[in-house]
Image 1 (cartoon, helix red, strand yellow):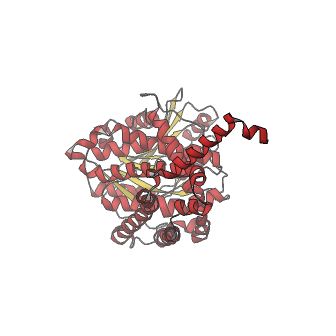
Image 2: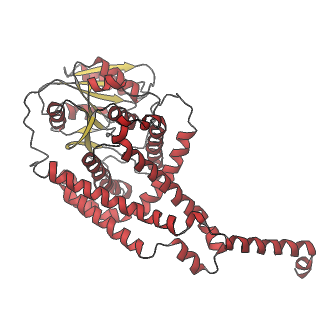
Image 3: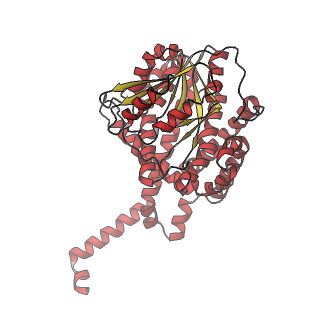
Amino acid sequence: MEHIIDHPWSQKAIDQWYQALEWLQELPWPLFDETLSRFIFYYPLLMAYVWMLGGLIYYVRWERNRGNVLTDLPVLSHYPAVSILVPCYNEGENVRETIEYLLNQRYPNYEIIAINDGSKDDTLAILHELVGQHPRLRVVDLASNQGKAVGLRTAALMANSEILIGIDGDALLAPNATAWMVRHFIEDPHVGAVTGNPRIRNRSTLLGKIQVGEFSAIVGMIKRAQRTYGHVFTVSGVIAGFRKAALHDVGYWSPDMVTEDIDISWKLQLAGWTIRFEPNALCWVLMPETLSGLWKQRTRWAQGGVEVLLRYFKAMWTVSARGMWPLYLECCISLIWAFLVMGLLLTAPLQWLVADTPKDALDDLSPHWTSMLLCVTCLLQFAVSLLIDSAYERRNGGARHYYWMIWYPIVYWMISIGTTVNGCFKALFKKRGQRAIWVTLDRGIRQK
């Protein structure tokens, strides 16, 4: 060993290595200086209070005097015809229950249009069986997998109604949901879409239980806040109502966007239509309960969001789009935040290497007391969401699922950051004009 170290070439290499380390230690590390470090830790803190404030304003203004959300119905001046669209791809296990729930709608004037989009299982056979039993049901059969956007557009063009409600083939729509959504279209002719309130059906695993709290504390609160502030990032893909004239105005759903729900939301709002949130329009859905399934789903959501930001970038440079500027800016800042956090995590070993002591490296990477503030804020946000949202969870146990939200910052923030970065690259390198077709997703463990 001594012979090797004394070798002039080896000694030179060692000297260069130490010089490189000294050079790294002298770098200012601008990416993770104090300013950016504060941004990384304060940005989610700020947005949490923005969402809480908006959610509370929505609750006080529109929600607190709703009565019993599971039994009460709104009083409508009239009951226009409604077409409920159910696009299906390999839904043989679920579609029968979905249609049965739809047949129990407490609304006098509606039809159901189920679209079989090239399913490879027995979905079409089940739909043919049901259509002979229920006069409200019509079936559209597409010979090959065309994608959800094409299926929805086909059904919309065949519908006899001006008001359309779209749900997924594995979703269970609450009996009162149609009436609550129609109310918005009657009250305001400028309403182009109404997004419903999805609830998680499968709650037998940790991921399922966390998602119960996520859809209340995060998704539901953000939708309330965005509605308060004027514009909504997206309607819910599993439960949303549309005015047919508004869809026709913007050219219906885009077949090449991986998340047709985000795209149609931006198209409608950029065209001047309003989107409202209806918390009483409950719809129980199946969600992934494996890490791989969750990763694929959230990557697709992130990719769809970035695709929308890219497609409507030019449209943002118009005065008529000024109402969307805050939403667009917030989405861009969120992307930057995710990339910065990912960069921080990836360079943490190098930071450790060049630090004088391990303690110095930890000091550089930690926000000190901010971590405690973030945790307290997270718990406060969950408490506020529980106050607002607990009325919609009576069916499945209510507040007991919020216990599992202590895992949210650990599990979901890491997944969210990773899927955001991954989805961004997928959107950037996606072949332009490529049709987005159905894929079979993780539906979790069903719990009836």
